[in-house]
Length: 279
Image (cartoon, rainbow, N blue to C red; front, side):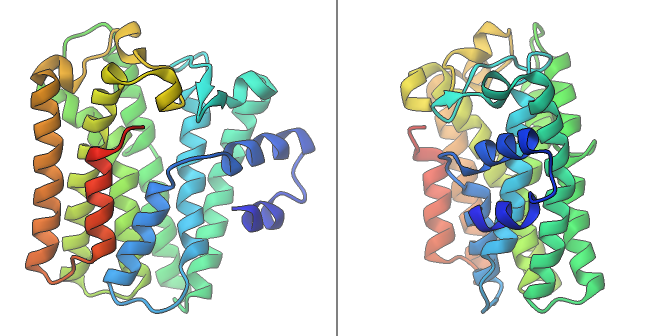
């Protein structure tokens, strides 16, 4: 991430550049990046996909910057320290988030070309990444999430929100890795299905942690879902039911890859981590 920042932020307003560095270089799970790398290896890729993985993390970090804004979830803490808008102000944080989207697109295209992909195939990877971050993915899911505050959603409605808000980028991370490796259509589809299931499992685990962990453990404000009047998986299924649902999704995700001879130790470990993590 440091290398990407050094390359991309030279001409950016220093206030915005500092906010972007703050958002990108802090502690984090880097799950989406690891999934991109894991899918690339599972799909037969032999080069170093770390720059491509970093571009996916830029999109994720942008979403956190905007998600925390006062007009959105209005959260003060992220990754164990002040949220970007608390550290740099709302205007700078908003501008930083906006700047990170084209930054991610440029980085993904450059990284794809460096992996030997054609201009057309590199453009397709950027397209998948931008679709996951746009109105049909994270942004659309965030809007649904805001509109759902104070309402009791059904399980089906809740999953619709989270397949977009959280799951779209996780699924895209896996798909992008497979595409970059030049995997065949059936392999890309299998890995995409793995990502779809894992994305939903991740959000269910997040909902459970919101009610069972502390702010110090999470690195963000615990109990935020309840404070905002959001429907959650523990609220619908109970904590035990939500945990079982997440584990079932992760198991089925791995099973799908195993049937296609694509399940690696790295992807199995990531799937296990998604549902058993403590933060």
